[in-house]
Image 1 (cartoon, helix red, strand yellow):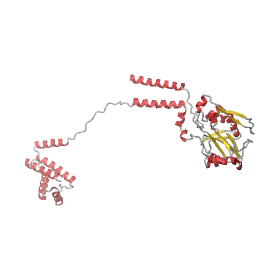
Image 2 (cartoon, one colour; image 1 turned 30 degrees about the vertical axis):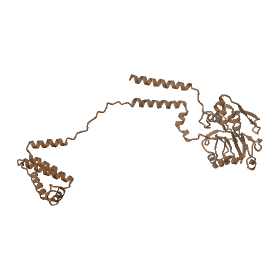
Image 3 (cartoon, helix red, strand yellow; image 1 turned 60 degrees about the vertical axis):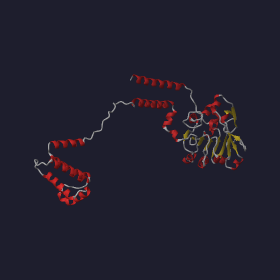
Image 4 (tube, one colour; image 1 turned 90 degrees about the horizontal axis):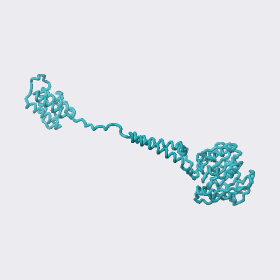
Length: 410
């Protein structure tokens, strides 16, 4: 018992030490872009959404609905639709939803490294650039070289300005094709856009609304808010006159399983440690309570069959008491029951002898006459009530041997 107590104390001390060490360790960040509302990592959108919720005058919400679903809810309501993701292949239903929203007066802002062939052909633009494998954490840690991005003048009232970003964040660019003038898409806000111009952001008119394409999605994240929020806020000022809805339906890690309660528990350090401690406690409970706590069950011998011994004992008693007639009558009873059970013949009924005797003779190869004589004598012995009329030893043996021979030859 003393050993178990020290073992439990050691486990508790180990857990406390591990908890303290975990608190002192530096935080390990994940630099994988998720653009998720619940993700507090650099390329999540938890801080980004919090900032827009506090600054957007007409309101800001996050939804899982697709662009097609948003276009079917309230087609007459003017709103800002924001989609932030890495790369997406918009299908026909998505493109139709975007056009429907813009035609009805909404402003759709698509922020991604790639929008898919169908959407880019619809707008007559091309998003291209290099996609080298950069170590973003290394660029941030060692303050790597930055690249300048210029904001040209527009009717929003913003003055031209240059913004400096880490080079890995500016890997893509938008090229406006010459065929754009053949569509009903026009560069709004008096931006000076020429054919084959390369830029990172461009806005087109569609119906009563607008469509804005931005190829800098990593700036619309928690990291973008902390590093350089001015450029991102300038872009989002296009939507400030209407309620803004950001859709997460196109995020790289959009998976219904991520909304499970267990995933939320794991994402929160206190709740995660609570689960770990509960699992360790359950394991210790199984270890200590799984031991044998009862006595060893003794081996019990199976009951022996003493039937043969009983028969020998009863036969010996009858023999020594010289009640030979009673012994033959008892044997006759067993003999008749055995024939009734195995051969379906009732030898106790004299009226059925004309049927049973020939049948029994065929089964045992004994003459019918001998069987009739034997059965008749045995019936007489069983029916007599005079206990003093005994039979000889030779007669008893003869009767019993004949009955046994008949039983053994059926």
